[in-house]
Length: 449
Image 1 (cartoon, rainbow, N blue to C red):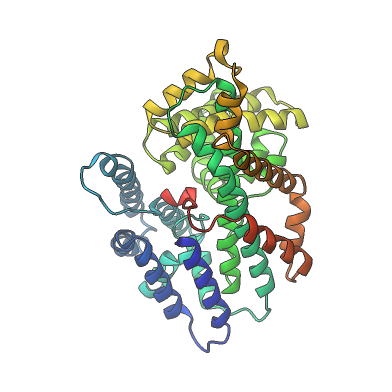
Image 2: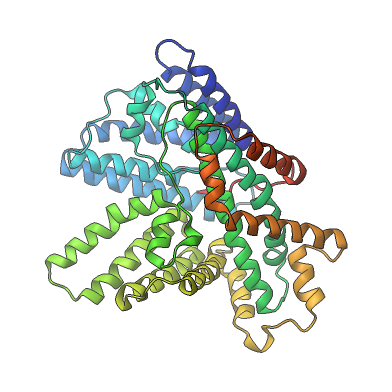
C-alpha cells in the first residue's frame, strides 16, 4: 500500500511544477491523507506530538526548555516502542499499528539541538512546521532528514527540471524492492520463521540472504523516497553508499543507513568522545565506551527487545576491535565484515528471546553444523520447497542479486543521471514485470520503526 501511495505522491509532484504560488497546502493535504489511509493512529499521534514540540522548539535556546524537550521526545520514543513491541504484541485485542515514530523523534531532537547551538532559526510558523513533519516520503521509513533544511525547500520551486533523475531513482528502487528484496524474502522466511531444527550452515546462509534482503529493501525504499522528492524539487539525504563494497567496519557504517549513522555520530559519539577526552581518560576506554554508546543508541532507535541490543553489542565489539588494533583495509576483511554483519542481523530479524535462542543454539552447534541430508536440510529450506519450480526461482533470485551487486556501481551510474537511458529502462521494466512481486510482498522492513 505504501508503495502505491508513494508513486501517486510522486505523480502529484510532477503536476506541482505547474502550480502557481505555494505548494505547502498541497503537500500537507497529500501527506496527511496518505498517512491517514495507511495508519490513522500514526497521524493522530504525530499531530499530538508536533503540537507539543512546536512551542518547545520555539524556546529551545533556553537550557531548561531543551532538557524538557529532549526528555519528552525520548519518552515518546520509548512509549512508541512499548506500544508496538510489547503492549500490542501481548494484547488480546487487535490494536491499530503505530508506525514511523522513531524517525520523527530523531528529526525533532536534531532540530532542537540545532536551535540551542544557534545553527538554525526557530520554526517560523505552525503550518510550515506541520508540513515539514508530515512530509510523506520520509515519514514511515526515513531517511532521517533535517527538518529546518526540508522546511526551507518546501516553498522553493526549482527552475531546473530534474524529473528524469527522479523517475530514474524511482525505477531503480522498484527493481530493488519488487524483484530483488521480495524474491530473497521467500528464502529468508522459509529458514527463520518455522522454528525448524536446521543445521547451522542453513541458518548461516539464511542470515547472509537476510542481509541482502534488508539492503535491497531499505535502499530500494530510500531510492523511491528520494526520487519522489526530486519530482517535487526537494532533496532528501542519501542513505546508502555501496556498503558491501567497503573494506573496513568504520567505512561500512558510514555508508549503511548513513542518515542515522551521521545523526548518531553527531549527537552521541562526538559529545561522549569530547567529554572523556577532556578528562584525559584512557584512549582504549574512550573507544570502547563510544562504540557501545553509539550502537546501544541505534538499538534503542529500533526498539526495546533484547535481540536489538545483542545485535548492537556485536556491532560495537567489532567496531571497537578495529579501532584499537587498527586493522587494515582489504577485500578479505570486507567479506569478514559482511559475515559478522549478517550473523548479528539474526538478532535484529528475530529479536524475541525464544526465536534467537533456538537459532543461536543451532548456529553454534558445530557437531551438527554441516547438513547430513543436503536436500531436505539445506537446499529445500533455502528454496522454500523441494520442487523444481522452487529451485528455479531460487537460482534466478540469487543470480539477479549477484549480478546487481557485481555491476552495482555501473547500474547506479546510469540511474543517478538526469536523463533517461531507454535500454536500461527497458531491461528493468521487463525484469519487474516478469519477476516482480506485486501482491503477496512484505511491507518495507524499516516501516515498523
